[in-house]
Each structure stands twice: as structure tokens, then as C-alpha cells.
Length: 479
Image 1 (cartoon, rainbow, N blue to C red):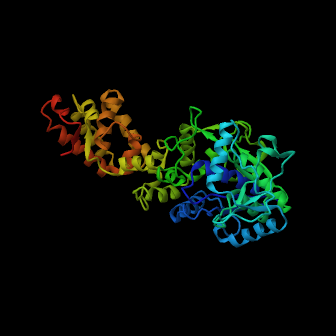
Image 2 (cartoon, rainbow, N blue to C red):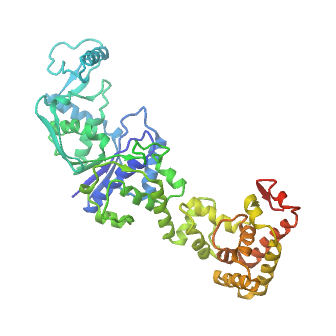
Image 3 (cartoon, rainbow, N blue to C red):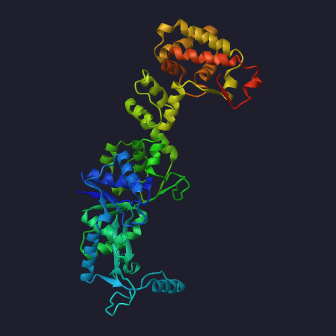
């Protein structure tokens, strides 16, 4: 059975690179009917943040990546780690190192002067003398001093590192707290992990963890080190590019389905397919098909996917999502028409909320540029004539197609181009030259509101002394 994990540190928010790693690990487990665990690596007590931890859990809940069992907290396992440290000391596989900070700094300076890579020289590896006074020792593991440390990486292939490249690294600090590579190896083994999927920034931690595995007689898992996500210029992804808190994507109006679909394609593919449901991802995902090269973050691609998922989200669900953006359309008698008209123009829920407001809220102002273009010449005559025709058809106006028929008849009867009525009507209804189809807008707001908005526009046009006055202010307020 495949067992994977995701192991964030609660020192900051979960960003999309971390979420992608979690997604790959989750998919690898679910594809084989296995288990996915969440481990919180909170051994750095001085940097832990309860707020960051809550945000990580919230992000998992939002995107729907469930984990098996309870989350494991490393900060609650110090006694367990201490037992393994004592075991390695008793077996002669680890030792106390009394090297002071001053000695270590001096050694590094000497090595750098000789243009050597700074590293501990093992001077206390076989020490059996009297410990120096006033020095609290660290615990170092005995790394192999010859041969190669090798493992097969599911993404990068066979990795071979000379054992001499790994020194006797610290597994417990002088205050007794264990170090990262030591506790990671122990937890991965004790949690029964078969596959470890993580970013390739961890690649050079792996040889050290292998040293711990072998010293304790644990079975190595399969490792997959995933290439990082770059920005569109091929550089490290920054917060400005999108490496931000996952929950910020929710605040911006992205759907979790779209974000997961976007992330799975950053480093993995299945033919030319671009759109994957979560069920399809589970069925098709294989970590052995992860790309070796870095992926490029593309906001346009994410927006395209998000627009697709918005269009395919049930209207009842969209109404719930809009509520978080200050738009309440529950119980709206034209909800279906309203969302049909607006989802085609929105790439985010925030944009959808703006499109809905544009229709259901009477415009408080006319855009100066749009008003100048639309409210000229015989605009009043066109608007009043169209309003009169609408009133004549009152009993037949229910659906967009009904309003569309009136528009067509008005254009035909007056032998005009559509823009002659379309432009002043649109600005009258919405305050601008944007928005959904006019027939949809009128069907949504109803005949009474349509006539009210036209009347307000006509009234305002009548207050204009000349075209020059239209451009006095950037925004012309409706009287």
C-alpha cells in the first residue's frame, strides 16, 4: 500500500508550491488506494505561529485534500526522538561533540582559506578523554567515511554522492532539541511512508536522512524530488508572481477545483489534456511521470481554468460563493437568467460579483466617456420611443427572447442600426458601455426597473446644457 505525507512547518502560510507538493503526495496515495498523512514540523518552537498553523489547516479544508488519521505534531514527540538518540549513543553510532562555537568558526575560516568546503572535521568522533568544562555538547551521528551514498529518485534518476561529502552532522543541539534531518527520517519511517514526494530544494537533505535510516535499520522509502515552480521569466517564483498564501486565492475569487487543476499541470501531464476533475487526477496520476524540468507559473492559464469551472458550477453553489463577496441573490426570481448572463464574462468570483452588481444595482453614476458617446443627438427620442414600445408589449415580456423581439422590432420600425438604441440604452441601464446582453439585463431587472432607469437617463440628459458640459467631470452623477 502506498503511504505518503505532507509535512509543512507552521512558520508561515501555505503557499502554492507547498500545496502542489501536497497535491502530488495526496494523488500518489489515492491512486493506489493508500494513505496520506499530514505532519506538522513544529520543532522550531521560537518560530512557530498558531496563526500560520490554522491557515495551513484551513487551506487543506478549502481545497478538499483530506488526510488520514490525526495530524502528527513533531513538538509532541521529543521524548520519542530522545529515545532514538540514546539508542544511537549506546550503539556507538553517535557521539557527543564538545567543539565550541569559537573552535568551529576557526575551523571554517581555515578551510575557506584553503578553498575547501567548510565542514566538521570529526575531531570528537572517537573521543574518550575528559570532556572540556563549560561546553554543553551536541550529538553528532557517525556518517560513513568511504564509499557512496546512493538512491534512485523517481524524478531525477539515480543519485550518487560520495560519503565524504556528508560530515558527522548534528542530530541533537546542545539544549537537547533534535534537528530537522534526524526527526524527518524517524517520522517518515515510523509513519510507514513508502513514498516521499517533495521539492528538489530537499534533494541534498536526502543523503543525511539516508544516514539516519541506515543507522537505525529502517527501510528506505522511494524518493521523488519535484522541480520547482518558476515565474514566466524562468526565475524563482516570488510573492508578486503568485507565491502567496493559498487562502489569498480564495479571497481573489478562485475556485479550489481550478487551483488544483492548475497545480497538477505544473510538473505533470497526461497527453494534451488540460482540464482534470479531481476524480480524473486520482485515476491517472503516477509520480513516475513527474517532469524533470521546472514549471512556469502562468496567471492567464489559471484564469482560463477558473473561468471554465465558474461556467460549470451549479447556480446554487455560485450563489453561496457570491455571498462571500457581498452579493446576496438567494431567492432572486431571475437567478438562473442572471447567472447565465454573467458567468460568461467572469474569470473569478470577484469579477462575477461585480457583473451581478452591475445589473441588479441601479447605476449611481454615468461613466463620463460612455455618456458622452451615447447621450447625444436623438438619444432622448430613441430612449422614449423604445420605452413606449416596451409598455405596449408589457404583458408579453418575461424572458430575454421577449425583450430581444422588442429590440428587433424597434430597430426595424425606425430603420436604424442597432447601436442607435443599443448604446444609449446600455448606458441608461448600467451606467457604462459594458456588461451582459441588453435583452438579458432587461429580463433580469424587469419592465418596471427598466423603465425607471430609462426615465432617469432621459431626465439627466435634459439637464445637460451642451456636449462640453458632459465632460466637465470624470464621473457624472445621476440626478
